Length: 162
Image (cartoon, rainbow, N blue to C red; front, side, top):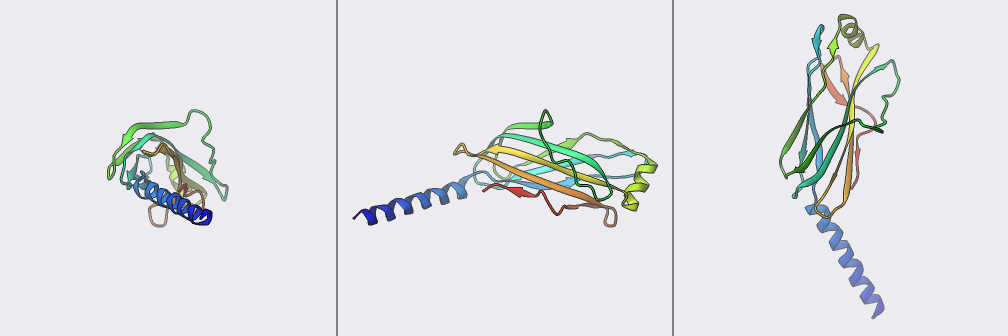
């Protein structure tokens, strides 16, 4: 009898976990639109979408455009006051787009980027809550590829909780 009761409780717990996974908010990094042109400002627009079935709440984002020399890794620390955006609620199937601060690309900087001496990295982290009060996070990292003229997914720092 105890064994049967334990199996029933385990099954109920598994069912509850599945319901939470199926009905929670799921924020996804959608895209980054940009332009990199000599003697122009870099204009980045970053989009996220809630692909879940319920709203995401208390959305916070840390997004950084960083120049990295040679083979160095980007600084993936988000401590302090780098929180650049917040939204109280993100409904399902709703895009959320943020502009990121622009910077002037000098001729010398543009040439260094095209030669691969200076890498342009875009990375960050978002946090949000689901309707079950669960705290969730997502990290993203992309690197500008001068050969194709767009940001490509970097080999690390693209993760999320489940």
